[in-house]
Image 1 (cartoon, rainbow, N blue to C red):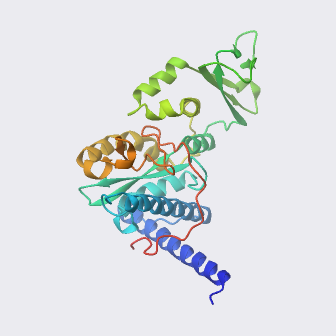
Image 2 (image 1 turned 30 degrees about the vertical axis):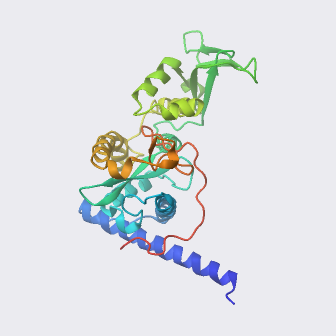
Image 3 (image 1 turned 180 degrees about the horizontal axis):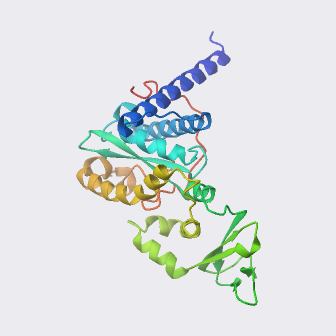
Length: 326
């Protein structure tokens, strides 16, 4: 009879071997595309292995759902069907920014089928926690803390802006009815520095939230999760105000990640329109709505920001038996 401990050891060994192969392939693919050799530091290797675990779990979850559908649709969600050239470029730049895929809302791998390539492009979307993290790390003045608060109609919020008579920008905030605060009317972020005179108050009104909602490709997530989406929008608006220090940042990785979201949004729209048979399949179990892999219990992604609204910690499961096809 096989010892359970032996099976666990074998599973862990298999997982480690496949993550090492993934790491080596990413370095090779990136070097070929960039035209120069590259090697991860020990810490970056750990981040790359975490990304492997995240992607592997996402592929397994999606493949399970694909096979469970009344009529399995599209190409299997396996490593052999992943566009590794694109994944390598995206992975390196996110790792170089210090993003950890196993930290909730740092990185969200979302596959879209690329009909031209015949493979899935994996969009490694940076979540609001990940963006806040790397923007703080590369700021000219690294904040000691950033306070985020949504303001409701019964709350008392008084901004104390910097002036001749007030050297330190601040605010007063009182929750008068903790269990029935009314409707959200806005939010604010307070960036705290070692030198209090540098503290900055940033306010976001409900009209600003509405603009973000209207700019989204769909209002489904805003309707289902109004508080969460406003909070995430607030975090984005506040961290956008942090001034980047060119000396601290990996300029190539920073520019690549910051500019990629807009570019991939256009490409996603083209791919989605060209691949309706894969991405927009109506399921008898969906109550008449379009069945999409984002609309699941394990992957609930906002199409605009890339946030997974109900993300669970990645399970330490064994990778798919075939592993990355390299």
